[in-house]
Length: 376
Image (cartoon, rainbow, N blue to C red; front, side, top):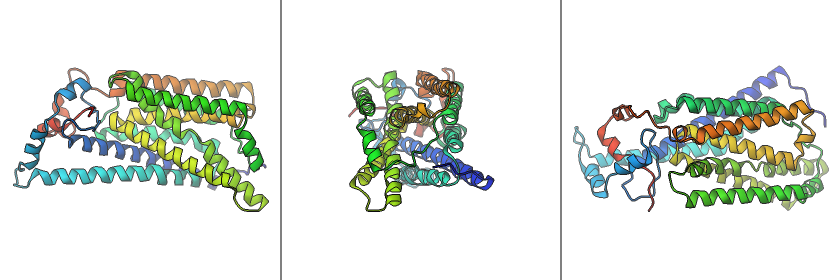
């Protein structure tokens, strides 16, 4: 089926929805990170709350945790105006949950809705680069919203990631397999190359899970695993794409929707939500810039690899130059990720000479309530 021409009006609407999706994505990620920071400040030591404050390393923050008795004494003391601090803690918990649910709704419903609407007006080759704007919003507003000021190395890494994503989007395959029927979709899933890819990906995700469970908290591999697992799971975009292909083929040919459509749709929802939960867990432990950037990197690499095997994108990219630029974009993405995984970039720590009195809350009491990663 021939591609329809993109008019100026369609282009504007497509870009508008795509930019709106990136704004919602960035705001949702910052809201989730902020909720975990508030939640971490209210937890006594010994709980499973895992929040890494931006200005404390793990060893230092562990040494500054309060005991349960100190937390209770602080909670039942009074403010200067005579109001109990317990009321303030209850309000803080309510704000934490509100921000968390707003972030989850934004990432699981509003962001995908805007992306689908954008696809109605413009070609994916125009819209795809704008997904990297999410990182821009996170970097611009993370200092104001969550008190985490990205370092120069993080800004450089995110710029490389956005640039690599643009190259992947511009020089990748933009075909849509509109003429496939149900039998073609089924045949694509029994292809030996695709089966091998799925086994490799499930093995990779299993390895990430084992690293998260068994490696120490200070391990760089553990940081990499937490940052990559969400995007790796969400990168299985074949379920959503193939369910839409089956839906269009059934409408074109007539007849009821096959059971395979519902299976793929459920798998698409499951992988998307599971990846979102992993992203939320990563933001519970690391700063918003690191979590967002690593999610984008692992998502793009997984989706690109899946497309190359499942949809044979290299056969449709169009020329050796485009293939070279496509691979160059992936390499730049990976290089940007390696910068982020470095300790200073991942933990977002201040210089050794910085004053802890310049923390976002500015109060000694809030400083004492900050907790770090803790095993039950």
